[in-house]
Image (cartoon, rainbow, N blue to C red; front, side):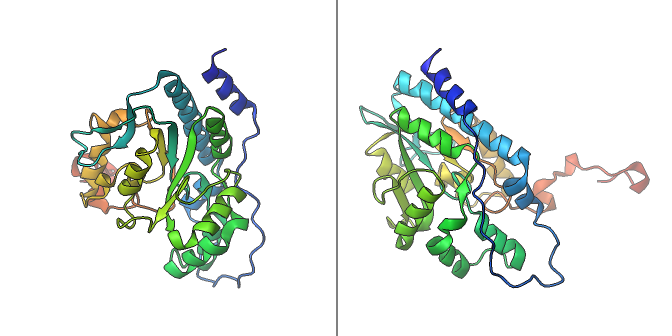
Length: 295
């Protein structure tokens, strides 16, 4: 059996962890007008077998891909170099640098189950003050994204350095490292295997951090739940339809599952945008004939 298949087999036989048990929260009862159940997106991501299965599927694919790349020693990383475009992508060269895989944290490797419980029960959604408090104190109510803990451990056994690149605040670096470890994802050291918003002058844009990482490592895989986890070029203000089209046009389309791996997140983020005209093109609309044939 090849190294790739042995590693994947070990993962398949390991018990797959879902999110950690969340301690009971001491919040007041929700007001009567709040929904009785979490939103559909939360039900899917944090509760459903389907959500867990698609996540594990992505992690299995990533592990097999990385094992093959470690053996093949690619010339280029999967990080777009400065000045590249989505139409004409160019990638950071690897040289003889050691291998690394770079991941977003929230809802990519770690589920923020406790925070989303708070958001669902209060009906407040995201706000900066609560999120800041969560970064500082939420380590007891997190867990691994299904499959992430086992695959990150397997990557390290292959000699691939696991690096986290997140938009959590640099002011909360120690707390974020503790949360990552509490989720069963291993150690993270700020400035070495943990990069945060505030590490450079680019704010929430991640390309600068990716280029810093590429100066030290040959990045052979990246994982995220938002397109900005792969390139800031996806967040250049395009219309919803143009942004979607950019993911499906070569050569970018060839990267999905081949160096760039997307994890499902229907709860929040840059993918949750668009009105009827963005989501439903005029030539793809329908209504029953009795309602007028619906365009």
